[in-house]
Length: 162
Image 1 (cartoon, rainbow, N blue to C red):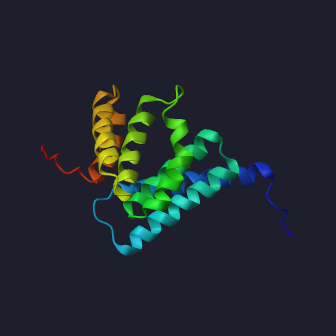
Image 2: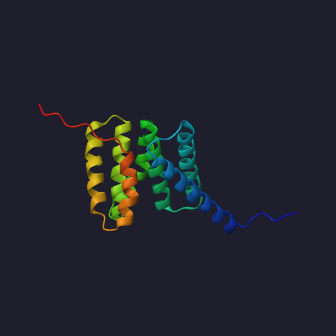
Image 3: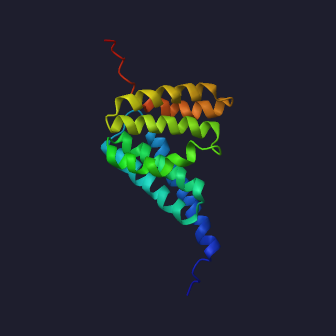
């Protein structure tokens, strides 16, 4: 009879699964056109990443996972779910501890969540901030990664003067 895996081995595999699911969900989220099956896979991968990070991650991992699920729900036009997960993620990304790329990503996701909830003003505000923050990132690799997210965000409608 085989021995059950040690707690360390289990945690190692859970971290691997969290990372793999996270990467797959982000890869699909950066795709401009997805099939219905890819939409479902994206949602399942995002939730799997969140599940595993809740098992073996720290508060930061859990916040990043909530950010991903919020973004995916917004991409799928599920505004209430997007807002729910955004509320879990948001405190981690607008505090003093947040890195510049995280702030940029948070503005992008908040813009997307606002769009999914038909909040035109918040969408426009955070969309513009996201673009500005990404442009200011000193690391070209960080900019490249975040530009992939910016490409999938709905563009705000022009303001009409009155």
